Each structure stands twice: as structure tokens, then as C-alpha cells.
Image 1 (tube, one colour):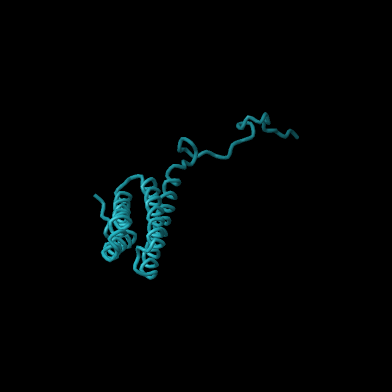
Image 2 (cartoon, one colour):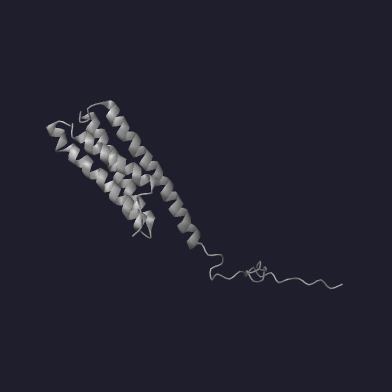
Length: 150
């Protein structure tokens, strides 16, 4: 099992989850048990996706799922802010800043992962053997090498 505590994206997501837990405590009863519960669950789901991506051989698929979870979280946080769930705009801005940082790190991780997989898949010459430059006659162009007779 791979370690994940050292990942900056995990630490940021963990801090976000702790912050969400603290914020939701102060929501009104209506928001606490509807939007607050959804925010708490989504923040934990983001942590799970990060751990899954770190442990997976094919990280790109998990990172794309993480991207979807974060988009869903952003929409939910905005809805919560606009419906009066957050006590202050400052609290909402803190959450928005954290999720933006996580999204940036996810995109960087995704680009790095996709770059590695592209390099692995691209063989030099089909069967892995190096060949010299092809002659026109080998390319099927009907051009035979011309010999010069003096």
C-alpha cells in the first residue's frame, strides 16, 4: 500500500475536510442536515479519490474522477453560500481557495501522469528495432536507386 500522507494535495484536501467539519457545526439546522451533510461527504470523497489515485497503477482514470468530485464540490459550496449556509463570505472564500488549490494540484498530477503514459506507449519503431533511413525503393514509390555510368 502506497503512502499518501506526504502528498501536498492530500494535506490540502485533509485541511479542507477539517475546515468543512468545523464550519458545518455552525450552520443553521436546515442547512446543517442538508447541504452541510453533502459538503462533509464530498470533502471525504475527495480524500478517498486522492488515496485511490495514489495507490492505482493507472492514475489518470482516478484523477479524472477526482476532477469530477471537485467540480461537484465547487457547485455545492457555491449553492450553500448563495442560500445562506456559510456564516460569512470570508468562510466561503477560504473553502473556494482551498478547492482551487486542490484542483490545480490535481491538474498538475494529471498532466504528469498522462505525460508518462504517453512516453511509455510510444515505441521507437513498431517492433522496437532501430532502422536506418528508408530508401525510396523500400517505401514503394517505384523509384529505383539510379546508378551513374561514366
